[in-house]
Image 1 (cartoon, rainbow, N blue to C red):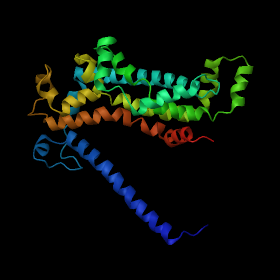
Image 2: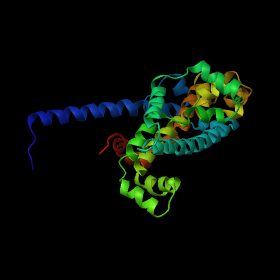
Image 3: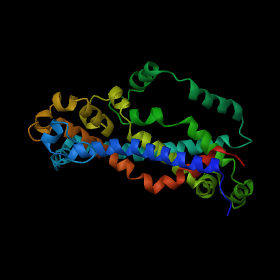
Image 4: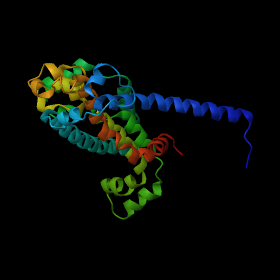
Length: 293
């Protein structure tokens, strides 16, 4: 066993303290949010709640879970996340597959066209005019999906990974009579599963946290997403200005602070609970897709 030098030992000690500090910075705010969401009304009002609850009051969770606006927002977010992620992965993979082919005519020109869009966009106003005036997608779920369907960075990552697939494996599919679609979906995709899983998780996270398109393109309450619902709750608008406000919160039973913190927990919990199952793909997938060799 190789003996570690003094410098390596010092580095390990410093690294441990830094990691502990980072963990505390991440964990303590979450503990505080959860504690406030379940603490007693008097303790919350008097600012006595730290990282441990003061009493237990789950009325805020019961009120949120029984609220039809939250239920509809949850269904919208889940469906948009699943459908949007699936469509994005299909389109991104097909674009990356085409750009990975050496015989693709105009490959460099198309690649430059995609890369330029990473640094220069049309801007908010032109995008809004296209979606609203030209495509007439106001109050349509397509307005949530289409503008962010393709992410050029993920196209480059997947293309780089596709270029590492042995050509002999691809040729074997052609020899067996497979067309390009079967080669891509039946032969290549199983090989790059870690990259696809990692990219899918990042896309799903972006879909789950989507709220700005709702603000721009929707005027209907039944088309809200969870993050837009949470935005209104945190800003206090949902507690005061909507038609559901009288049924939402009784300040004598559920303080607005309890309701806001409970909303944060319920909105974040579903997507956070998925991380342990796909975490192993993150480093492996992104690293494999960014290094050719």
